[in-house]
Image (tube, one colour):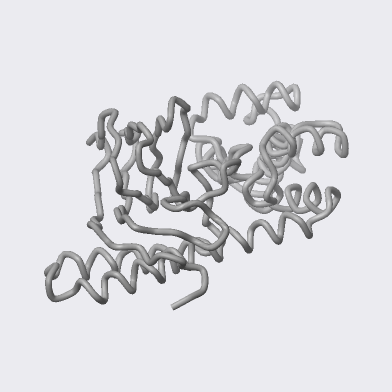
Length: 276
């Protein structure tokens, strides 16, 4: 199929896992002697302990376990959690040691959000093939696995190329636009950094040097600006406006708005009224 594969992977199993909010998905500390595993988080968030280090993963992330590496997996129960899994052996990729999907300096948890729809679909199709019967679908399942690994590799290479091409100023400007357009989603620093292919700490440093405040502080300012607009131009309740600008708690919104403007939301609305 591709010169990428010096030794083609042999599928051992694939499965989809789905948990409702409140239901835990936990795999205690374990390792596999020869099998590699790849996971795609389709919904929710989870914590992974891999080779003694802690990682967080959320929807759109891939998680990789090499053979002989100790790991533990635990989903977060606050929201529904879904992930897809595939296990395989006898793999070697061009330029990498046998049984490796990553360079030694690459992290085992990484984003594939730029191509998550296709990767999600391939995982789904692979799991469907396996669930329909191993003996009848072995060949097609192996081909789907190879397509999946090719797509993951291509996505990682594309991200690396974009990282190389994206200048520092362009990355910071792109992060600013992302926040301006998505402030209401309360993006985390990791989400913003993923969008511009920088580490959270590096982006925070660059953003502060350029704009004099952190990305999160800038996001809060965007929420407050939008809230002032809603208060002065609409009849939405304070609770509705809190939700529209990204706050689940009306109390937290009230306190932050008053700290930023010197007035409670209700008072600000009265002061900004044409009749006041």
